[in-house]
Image (cartoon, rainbow, N blue to C red; front, side, top):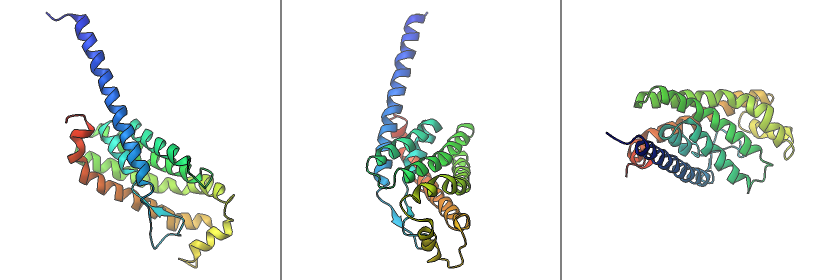
Length: 208
């Protein structure tokens, strides 16, 4: 007969090792996400100050491997690190975190309920759609009001009109430009995640 105290102590040690591993993987993925923020690039259908990057990819990996909360933590940490070098008063970092959380949280929650490749695909797509939709109010009420402290709203709108002269007002620009762009960004993260998650899974789950 096994000793209950020995069993309990073993469970506690196992739980501690699991938490330490989860925190270590989260820190590693946060650092990678921070680096990926610098590997951004312009796209022809967006103003020059809006760049594409795949820095939500490590957060998506964390959400699938460790749980949605860890994924959101990766989004938070990468933006806190980027806040140390920001030149936009934190507007970009705040929006990036909020949109990242809107993407990662639904994706991770769906995957928790449906732990399969189809569940991962469904969750990630749901997260990308939620992020795309919520990019409109988040940008309209939070990000751009902060940006206007650095660039007049008329100057911002002119950058959109350089691409689509008939663009009329910030809200229309967010609907016709930013929402599709944000959705595309999320779907790019989804595609990359599905390509690399399985090969990385043993490392993320501490099985190597």
